[in-house]
Image (tube, rainbow, N blue to C red; front, side):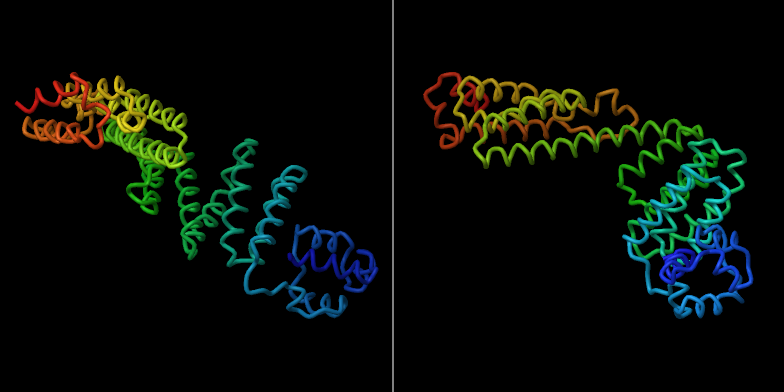
Length: 347
């Protein structure tokens, strides 16, 4: 609780007016009003008299605590948002500074109080908004000392955008070190800086890496949903996931092999002869499209190792061996087309 709130609470508990308190302390009523609103702080020489007048200890007056709870911090953040709607920005700034000086070790409060204030001054196009830069920057930088990785990352992101707004791209880039190199958000931010600083080759490559890894991630997610649908016996949903996976492979230009192979398992579980044979045939005739993405202009700035003919032959033989499994594909053993398909490649 802020010192002004403590004063207001215990003053009211004693049914004392602001004027009455001011008379007893030898100050003006507006001064008491400013304390309670958080717009100013009592002089240090008045702290003991205020505590005696309110019949509380100095510790209680100053709200000495080991830490500010997140609930208490959120209440102060809500108060900050309300003040920014109804009060002048300079008054809110002084209130914010007083508030943060009361809780100098609450990194959560420091980060989000500064963020709320920073966003407000930018969105409302406050005149001479840069005069607050040093304080806001100092708040964000302090939070980098937090033991919480979540808060450190949020502070690093705030600092990144702080410098991006200033078009100080080299300084913004420094804060990307707080993110994992494989973090997609870091790559997005890095690619943006590359583009803004004329490093177009690096920007293109990084955006393409994001596309490539994005396909892998989405494909795994679809596969996970598909597998759960099969476990639940929901073939309709599983088929829907297959179609999504196929569309994904097409969209990201991963080649026809990846498009058609997604449906093989469910065709086998459904014992669908026509669908199974179609997928088998398309997989065998499109083996070389396994690395189709390497030829796509979507990934023109990425470097891939090109599979040789031996690799494709090994894949083909592996597929044929799997397709010949009479236990898995028992429903095909009397079909001439299946025998010809797997027998042709055997010779």
